[in-house]
Image 1 (cartoon, rainbow, N blue to C red):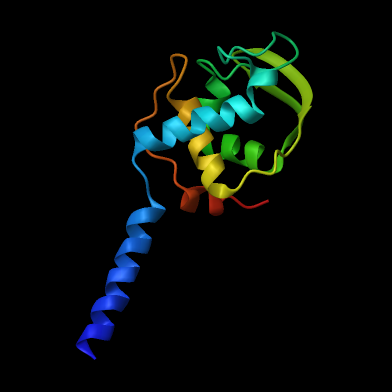
Image 2: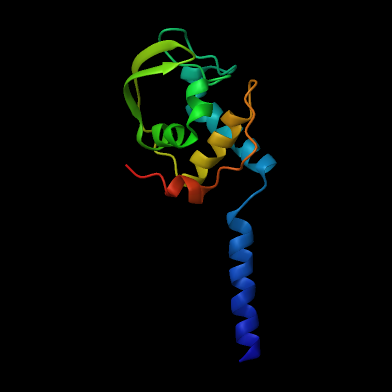
Length: 131
């Protein structure tokens, strides 16, 4: 019985320890996701296109409400928003990313191009963002 319990708790520990990765690892994975899904609109420098595609670099929209930004990636975004005092009125489609991928790309965006965010976005945090 002790052996079974030891294996059970070992598996739980392994599962928990693998569900969270370091911030550095998440950022590296997020860079790959960004390059696959986001770069074509927001560009390699995160500056977007003035008047058309909002910037992610030094973005007040992104940094002032991280949950709203997660929501936009998770469910898409349509309509007027204001980013760095400039209005944008477009559509960002849901990219079909899983919660862990959204967490990784958020960690990358929040720590790139002059952005700095001390917390780690996890897939659990993304999962709590509901429509």
